[in-house]
Amino acid sequence: MELSAHQGTETADAGVTTGFLARRLGVSPTTLRSWDRRYGLGPAVRADGHHRRWSPDDVAMVQEMCRLTAVGLPPAEAARAAKEAARRGRVAVSPLLAARTRAGVRIPERSAMTAPRPGTVGSRSGTGLPLRDVGQDCRGLARAAVRLDALAVQEQLAAAVRSHGLTRAWEEVMVPTLRAVGRKWESSGDRYVEVEHLLSWHVSATLRHVYVSAAGHAAHATASPVLLACLPDEQHTLPLEALNAALAERRVPVLTLGGAVPPEALMATVRRVGPPAVVLWSQSRSTANPPLARHIAATRWGVRGARTRSQVLLSGPGWGEQSGPGLLRPRHLAEALRLITAPDHRPDDDSAPVT
Image (cartoon, rainbow, N blue to C red; front, side, top):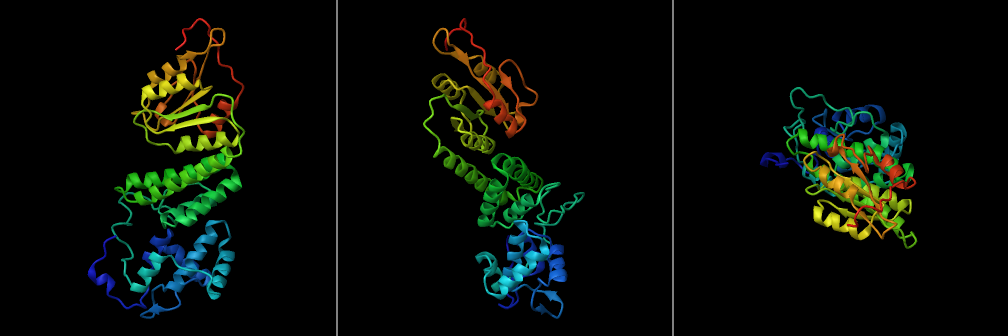
């Protein structure tokens, strides 16, 4: 955000406004005022007798309140803990916010960056994101992402996986938050892009950590791996990373090629590996490729008398209602896992030529 020259000329003790602090922490100004009224978590000094100006110590205390409520602590209990931590000097404000607070940078209570567009309804999530009906851990993750608190984002994601398991954490925490950020980005002229990038990066890091941890304890696989790949021109890899980690947890051999795999490379891998299942991800109709999927489903290999083929799973919204022989259409991660790990009913066809 660009600051005009007169916005940085206040005294070093001026602190920051409630509006600026609310945007920085990912909560609403009403929430900050409510915490002040109910729990005494307000600025110790008020300029001109009534205007709220938050000092670094005030900000650190409210940051601790945000952190504690994000992990599920009831507000009253979180407020007591935050005030006690502040009294003991055990909380610290983030470096960026501390610098802005010490400089007395004044941000208008409502700016063009945050004003609701005409005809839109403000979110009640406290983050400015359209979260709708979600759980506390999802809201906590959203708040951490909006205030660009990378450490808190990673802590929230790790806690979600520990508490719910990977599949539920993906479907009930990660996906709703990612979708909310994506909707906000698309509807606000590319604002919030930094929030989307931060959240996506940490979701990917969490999924890969689960995969590496599970793969490191797996025995050497003798069976052919399940093949995961995005269609050509498709760059959305997070859903495949989630499936990759979930399969590794179940000790299912898996080979992930990632985003935008050329058709020739995909077919060469199928022939070379002979996977029991191939998962093709498409985020939008423009990247779905039904002829390629049908070609993979029809491809057979192996020695005479033991020829086989892959089941093909069409994953992602880009496929619409596509289906056909050898094509499965899972709607979510749990269903994809069930289809992949179910007993293999692939037909043998000794009359088909080996590809």
